[in-house]
Image (cartoon, rainbow, N blue to C red; front, top):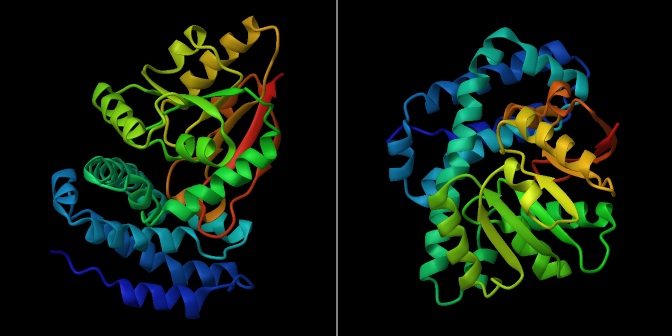
Length: 293
């Protein structure tokens, strides 16, 4: 097992760095070794090794990255950190790990839900559950959803927590799309074990299936790829519709952009951004509302 020095990392962020943005260059020198150390640490893990970790070990490793991404850094400092050449060279590795972490932990969660006698209680005990709940509340409040609306979610994953919470908290009906057949089958079983199969439909497919589905709103997952192709399909579909509904997508801003590649301007050609909801607390995603030009 690799030595994960979590306590030291946590102490640095909370006491030595928090709010230290008066001298951004000095702050960059404080945080750079820790980002590089994290990258060096995860180089020792392949996917099979990560899958072999106990859930608490997997989550503990993720927390190191999570603490880095949620530092109280201003926009200028975040930009300096993300553009620093050595750090930038490690971003593909870090972001690949982040995506792999979510693949693994969601499958672990799905299996725990399916074998649980009380799946709702198991779901609520999931460490990231409060973040998803805060994210969904922020998003729904900003969307001004009408009654009887149906949302389609591109890149729903094996445990579509966003769709589950949108229904549980607001009664919203939805359709989840995922390209992986195994993921779709697992997601269907999870939805059924929670008793939501009449409210949430899971379909194997991608952005090319949007023309075949009846929907009023679309949400693009932060991890759904490839972004440019997804938004190209959305442009084509929306141009054919009589009513041009807003497109909602999740992305990463500020220091959270160390976690995963943000949506780029070239990805959303043909759209204009109407508004965005910045994350608070430990929420990862910025919620962006866009419409056709």
